[in-house]
Amino acid sequence: MERKNSPIPRDWLRLSIGIESVDDLIADLEKALE
Image (tube, rainbow, N blue to C red; front, top):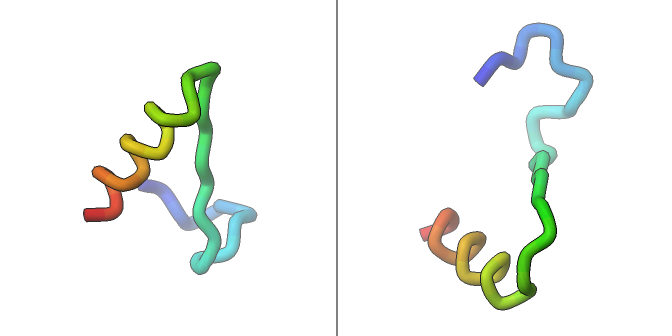
């Protein structure tokens, strides 16, 4: 991940999602945070 020129602060999380069911999104987030 490139951070040198990023305008996003280090303590922020960028989340890009598409059109999915809420249950799928929650399951994916829970798995990623394990």
